[in-house]
Length: 153
Image (cartoon, rainbow, N blue to C red; front, side):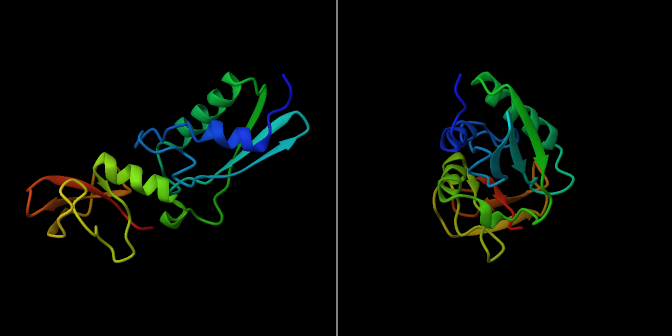
């Protein structure tokens, strides 16, 4: 197989889901920071969402598997901790996918703009802690449905 272009590699990586929020890809999450060939080895730089993220090793394995399944024989995952990941790195496509899935995307104001289900702006925080460390639990006071809010980092 001829060597894949960086454009093709980015397309392949855009199909690798985040293990904690499978509706969004690792590319849309903004944690894939770069791809580069070093001789016959493809190096993929990944910045975890935070230093203690339990999904980091699973993400590395999923990226490596996806690339090897497409014929890339040698893959090296480089963990890049600086600069630190920020929710600003989420793509617009990723933000829309989160909301369609029922997770309110991050908002600089520090809370959801609206309920991802009924779009009401009448929401209240239930808990600063959600199903994963990067999410908080909120509820809509109109439709009464609870939902996750992806915290701003």
